Length: 254
Image 1 (tube, rainbow, N blue to C red):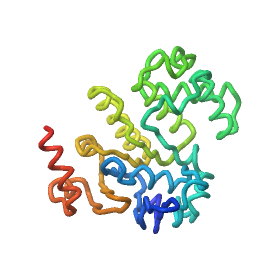
Image 2: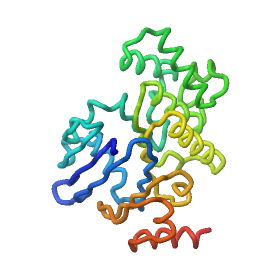
Image 3: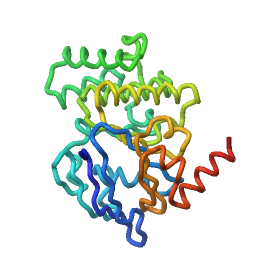
């Protein structure tokens, strides 16, 4: 049963089609990896689908179904921040540098959950602990620039889970991290999926990363889906030339 369904999604500027008639479903409780080379349209597809693209800059058409709610892409913003969370590549840009991490949590949780400051602080610290952050009080009183990239990714995941998100759309969440931290963050995504049943869309350009985490893989090239299937089949028996080239580049690199 799909949780998020994208139908006939088109994104264009005045003179160029950037996403061309994308049809893609995300099953409830799965980890779907969306992979493509730089500029392929993978990030734009999901930003458009959940209402994050500026409608004054882009013309967006298509239908989105979220948990049986059929919407236009621009109306999907009603679910953003609570049911749907977007995890950015660079978590530093997600936080206001003059506001502490604790203040971010309080503001978000009090708004979305209609709770008081004390309740918000309790929920926030519980989720920071669940994401295996240490010295929670220090993290809570810190500003974003005082924490490492790996810690900020965990903070973003904790915030997403604290508001009750049902799906995490993670846009290249490991790109700016070192190899050891990448593995730890991948483990956290897997744990959130298995223990809490959260659905994950993992956007990446790296087959080595997604081979460790994905149930299914969708390959995007030039704004179109060129292949979609379970991870094992896609890696061992790729159908599209784009997939074959990307896998060959990975092997040659290794």
